[in-house]
Amino acid sequence: MFDIDLWREIFQSINKNRTRSLLSGFTVTFAILLFTILFGLANGLNNTFSETFVDEASNAIFIRTGKTSKAHKGLQAGRRIQLKNQDFAYIKEDFDAETEYIATKVFKNITASYKNNKNNYSLIAVNPDNQYVEKSKVYSGRYVNQLDIDNRTKVIVIGKLVEEEMFSRTSALGKKINLSGISYKVVGVFSDDGGDDEERIIYMPLSTAQQIYGNNDYVDQINLTYNPDFDYNQAIDFGLDLEKKLKNRFNIAPNDQRAVRVYNRAMQNKGINQMTSVLGILILVIGMGTLIAGVVGISNIMIFIVKERTKEIGIRKALGASPKSIVSIILIESILITTLAGYIGLLAGVGILEWASPVLKTYFITDPSVSRSLVISATLTLIGAGTLAGYLPAQKASKIKPIVALRDD
Image 1 (spheres, rainbow, N blue to C red):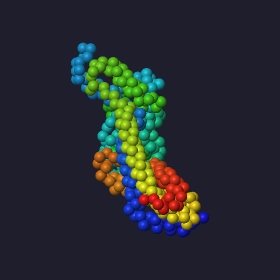
Image 2 (image 1 turned 30 degrees about the vertical axis):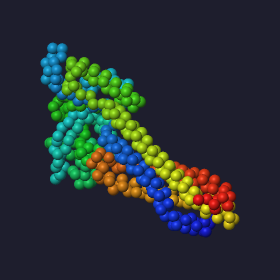
Image 3 (image 1 turned 135 degrees about the horizontal axis):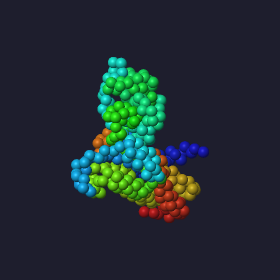
Image 4 (image 1 turned 45 degrees about the vertical axis):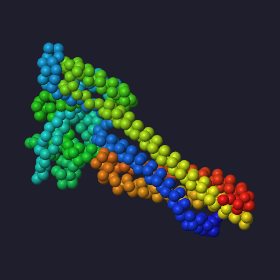
């Protein structure tokens, strides 16, 4: 049962010994505050890295071409390397086991008009797999499919903001829109986590664009995703092998870095993973060091508290108090102070992170936050340490004979 006299006695003890209680609480508050801030900053960095690549698959590889910078096999420097449909077919066939999705791109700038609305947008001609490489989310209608490629159909898939700007927030599905003088039917609307720029894009079938805008089989870019079962090293080796074979295919010098550029996300992901791992370990060590310092601090204070109250314990025993009741009073007081101080430290840490969030974003720390379960676990650790630190000397003191306790200096 709830013993009101026991709690009244505990609060009276805390009130009479304010300095002691504040010192005990400050140790815990500071430990939890620092622990919360450190892990919040670490999570903020991880959020920044995650948001940077949110609009594309994490296992993506991008293939672009330029001009050769070195002569090779009798061919002069300055040759323009042009990707074509045959190169797409070559990669798809020869690297089938290593790839998950593979897509092509042709870039155009167009003027779109619908009734009285007109605006300029980026037009990208693609094939169906591009949806998964770009992580586009079709929420109305469908994406470009293989039948569109085979039949060179005049259909488009538009971004959410294109729909809002051109169709006055009404559904664009099934309507026809004029793109630089040519009419296309809207068959789908997509959203993209990459932001507004990604949602101001219009996609159309690659074959249609090749026929209408140049009557050729040119491709500006080939994107693919490597086998998701690959680890970082396997993915990096695959990217290097792909680059080597493409250079051989186009008669490019092995050390020419401009003619064919293969950007492999695996290399960046590996570096980020190593950095975040080291950062996580460093922060964990500092955080644990902070907790250990808090444990030592609260332990020392509790030992001092029990030592200071030896005479009081002797008087209680002389008046008939049982050892159990003496230990309970000290333990409950310790747990109460530690819990309250830990909660204050948690609130202060979360408050500081939220207050500093706009400033931290300029330093590439996005939405710094910390898991409640982690901080609660840290607080419980300190509570446990405070309980143990109070229990051992309290148990020892409760066994002292009253006459000995009353003689203690």
